[in-house]
Amino acid sequence: MIEMHDIWKTYSDGTHALRGVSVQIDSDEFVYLVGPSGAGKSTFMKLIYREEVPTKGQISVSGFNIGKLKSRKIPYVRRNIGVIFQDFRLLPQLSVFDNVAFAMEVIEAPRRAIRKRTLEVLELVGLHHKQASLPSQLSGGEQQRVSIARAIVNNPTVIVADEPTGNLDPDTSMGIMHLLEEINYRGATIVMATHNKEIVNNMRKRVIAIENGVIVRDEARGEYGYEI
Ligand SMILES: Nc1ncnc2c1ncn2[C@@H]1O[C@H](COP(=O)(O)OP(=O)(O)OP(=O)(O)O)[C@@H](O)[C@H]1O
Image 1 (tube, protein in one colour):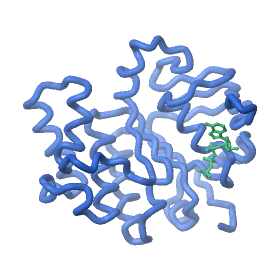
Image 2 (cartoon, rainbow, N blue to C red; image 1 turned 120 degrees about the vertical axis):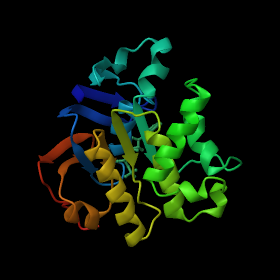
Image 3 (cartoon, protein in one colour; image 1 turned 120 degrees about the horizontal axis):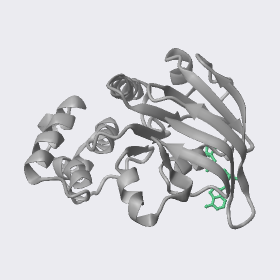
Image 4 (tube, rainbow, N blue to C red; image 1 turned 180 degrees about the horizontal axis):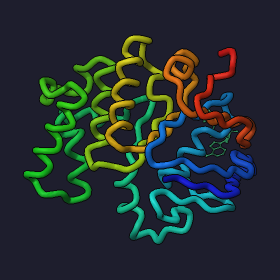
């Protein structure tokens, strides 16, 4: 569960990226975050995975008041949140297996558990057979599936995806969406920022629209609602 109460985010140059956002997202939800460029979507997501802290207001994720978290607790909370980016952000010198395993190594999981779980999530994303490849040897869709495997390997309760299909063609994008649906079905909350009208209109889910740092629309089975 994610709760924001009167969240304001003002960057150091005075930009008001979010202006009084209040929202509740339940544990089983899949939410699309839409809105024009510069509306505040990435900022909304960064507050969830604690890349940024709010200037004002309260935010809690899975019961943690993450705006006011003690620094020693940050790694513990972060492992409960998987993040997926448009540009994949894989480590180019590491194999597919090691890119995924790395996320478990940093939390000091036991070696055998790392091997078992890494192979399990690579199977889930359909890349078991590519475990020894380098990211540069994969297609864009395959690289995104590795980044999804990395995001879910520690069993997070929340997945934040910022334009996950932004660099992918329509067919590959649908494959990624089905994978995210499966992960949601298995119990993770998913918040996904997107400019992809077809996906939002074809896979009807809750849509939260942000404009100018304010939530202007919040619909249970919403539409994209913008022309581009
Ligand atoms: N680190 C920063 N310092 C100053 N201003 C920032 C910073 N990050 C974002 N902004 C500004 O905050 C506002 C919201 O940006 P944000 O990245 O959240 O928008 P967005 O909706 O994700 O846009 P896009 O769809 O283009 O990714 C914009 O005006 C942006 O220029």
